[in-house]
Image (cartoon, rainbow, N blue to C red; front, top):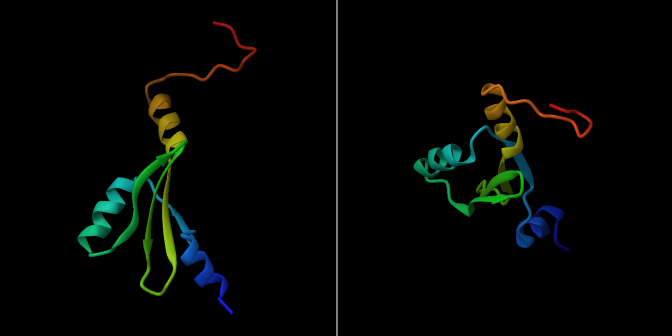
Length: 88
């Protein structure tokens, strides 16, 4: 009988997820340490992610929330979000 961890790995599902500020920077840093990625950085909606194997049989997913980065970027520029009921 296959363990849950083995089944998740075989199916390509991440077992552990870490939220990071910048997936591309972490990807480059880990590549320099000879970490092998099964999924290079990809964008899906409001997140960017990459997946690597931790050498113990677990998939590790790095995730960057792009919506937070977008909001912070525009908040620093003094843009404001208007609710549907707001008027200028």
